[in-house]
Image (cartoon, rainbow, N blue to C red; front, side, top):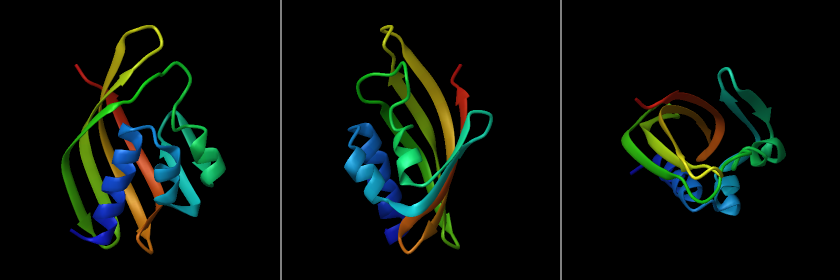
Length: 116
């Protein structure tokens, strides 16, 4: 497994455990995170504000179905079940596109859609 894929795996595991330190260690200082239609943040401080968004509790269950890499870009496809404060779960499918630099995540675009 390449260093880039190892970093993405560590990032996903950090989210599974809601381990902010582990998540942030996978990022460049000038990281960007884009969720089309929701937000676009720049830098680790802004990124950290979205690790657990309002209304969510506990740890999400993240399943990566496919992880591919080419030219310092890693793409992860999968599903997530995130527990919410009201006792329900939000179930999503995702495709995350990670632009890597020096073995760390420089830019992330997260395409999310409710699972049906």
